[in-house]
Image (cartoon, rainbow, N blue to C red; front, top):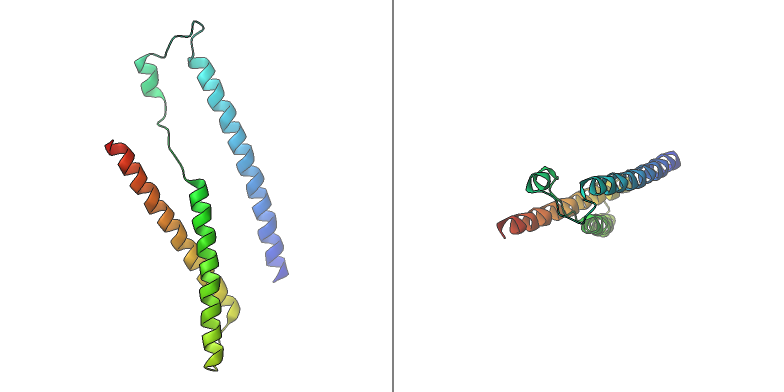
Length: 128
């Protein structure tokens, strides 16, 4: 089991470094685009230039991470309760599978809830 933990940790670190690099690169590209479109005399962009800009997308990264963590913790609590009830009734249960599957289930539910909240916010912003 420890080999799996090492692989997961290494993949998490690599993914974090990749996302940090992507974020900083994207920021530099946006700053260059802004510099290219601005005028030296402080004028504004033409309407044609404004139409070519990609629409800004508001993301809820913290909301998604928070909901996933809440879901994982609820999954662990629910798995503990199920495991405890199974032991009281003297039934065999594979604890690893129980904990892992319920953590994934509730974590996924957290992501779905976050997605639905983002869609609701996006529709509200479009109607305004």
